[in-house]
Figure 1 (cartoon, one colour):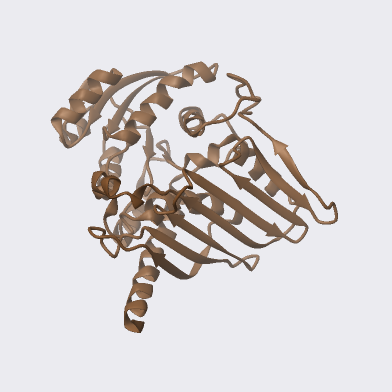
Figure 2: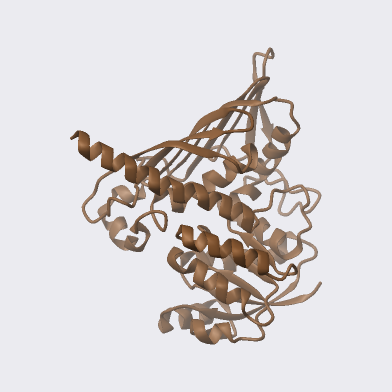
Length: 366
């Protein structure tokens, strides 16, 4: 396998999850590139220096220095949402970059979306771009998506997806994460959490989903009205006529880290919950029973480490997303390329517009 020199733009918590995943690849897969942790860049000198020392990067650089680093051929864009586009543009212009891993959301405005589409057309076709929707690589979701695409359940009729946290109910947590409370589409629950849910829905339902309306709830001191703490979308899939709801929350008490998907179709139904990540469920009309399809951590035939029957964890899907990024060997998995990321971003951006309308109408009725 080839040798690659990896650079990180960002040295925060998500960057730590990514370096863990990169360093774990050799345990799970037989053939992975030889990975050199070349450089980490961030706005604060002390944070990038500490990150480089702790995790074994050769250099800690400013963003400007990083952009001129000729050794880096793989860039992970892991900084705040508002600089994702700026860092993406920088990575494309670096002299030897062939791989770009872009965390969600891919950008923060319609103007940046349009510029990103133009850059994608101009980009060297040899540059591989992947967006950080690792839930597509959850073992049960991978297998569940294959089952759904088999067509056994028929055409979808209606669906529901929830992605819920409860942490922002606590004032101390909101204070620590104030940078995530910027107005949508840069911040808010739909951009931060819901984008994962939109990605999953698009994997099952297609990328032409449309918003028909949106609702917003949650009002706390210090949280801008434009940063949704809970938002709910009504969605239409125009090809099949299927309709459904998608909601994202930072203030749903007791949910932990909940991803829950239900699809009801002409011949049956599909269900997945992160509360039971070992399996997905399906129902065939006339059978009178729900079937649990056990999956565990099954990534065969690609890998069986540590074992297919052990429970999967949140980081396991991220490890596999990195394997797919570096090798492209899992041809059966959905891949979140930049076009997918931009399709998700369209819904995130349109959510902000619908929520603004809702807030205006709600205030007028008070």
